[in-house]
Length: 262
Ligand code: IPE
Ligand code: IPE
Ligand code: MG
Image 1: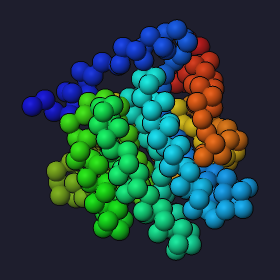
Image 2 (image 1 turned 60 degrees about the horizontal axis):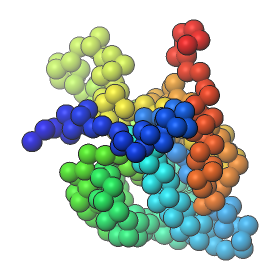
Image 3 (image 1 turned 180 degrees about the horizontal axis):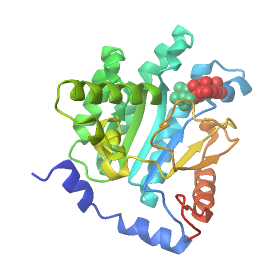
């Protein structure tokens, strides 16, 4: 049985996706990360409760997953719940905690059909048990899939991630198992919750909807060299044309990584 990594490295992008991208001259981010924002404002515009926005936002997640898969994205990370979101009203938090269950109940068969694998980053152990069970079941049912990784940031906080990684490295040093000088950027990155993604851990493109232009504690270490795309479109309204515009904008970017123009 090849390891997850062997399988991932062997993965060939879907041929039809490649054809589409060549025709469109699109540069496709290998790792696309999205800060899905604006659900509350979408609902407010319609004089509906905030949770109606979250419900609609879930439909966008399904759409965007299919769009990303169709163009050959290898990892799609979606910021679904931050460590700071616990401060929201209790009813809203409890609705958000029920969403993974609703989402996976209706969407897992399609994920399986599309060979998409579900994973998470963030401290899932702090979520209600029913939410944890839904997430675990989705991971289990898609564990053998070798296509796109659909990675949900659930109870994720970038600073928490960095601090936790530092603690585990410090403990290894204290036990005498690791020399402080042996802590490299690569070793540090492996300790973060995105470590399992290996060379795909860093997002190439971060999209944020709703007009806000900030990271809100999302992948601060990993996004050090990411391209950013901000749009005023609210997450429930984010559609194919918005997705295409984000990718064509990304295609025109010159990523220099501190070097000179390519
Ligand atoms: C994003 O939409 C969803 C989550 C953070 C869970 P918001 O709920 O933040 O929507 P706005 O920003 O209030 O419009
Ligand atoms: C970021 O959005 C978190 C998620 C999208 C899950 P927020 O709406 O919570 O961020 P702030 O409060 O505007 O920074
Ligand atoms: Mg918001």
